[in-house]
Length: 227
Ligand SMILES: [Zn+2]
Image (cartoon, rainbow, N blue to C red; front, side, top):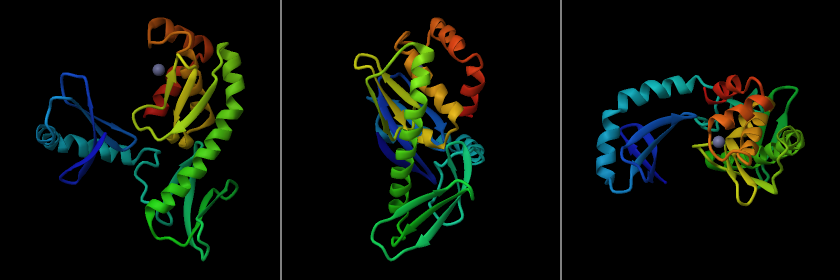
């Protein structure tokens, strides 16, 4: 994966076995996939032609409930476990950046001596990862009971192209850190989706039938989480 820029548009380039260059926007992020044999110059040319289309879709994405476009500055709206919070950055003399979540006031407070957005982002990400882990731990037993399938372990990583990946052979799941923005219902849907892969590896008709049995209105939740 590579980060590239064309005009004002930043995008991630993923090289893979494919026949054409495709562009999509996920969570406010532009992701371009291209065949291995296509040069960077060719990719840039194709993406340049798509700029108006990308801008239109990014604008739409900007109205979406997503943290992908955060600049990590005081007063920003930040999403956490399906709720809308206010990001507060407070100056601190301490070396360590501390992240506090005040659910009652709807605030995420970062106390930091740094003015580097990356430092703040890292601290927020670390805290969100911990919170997401606690959330998954609390939802997993019920999801395992519903599907009748269990996993050995899971991990949480930064992923932009999927909410989860089921490693069928090891019976493990990797969840996207971006799930920390999502509601219990949406997180539960993703857990059940990944567990269902232990029954059906592909998104076949059978897979969908199982999903309907486990969560009758999964299609609505799927639409919501990806909208
Ligand atoms: Zn799947």
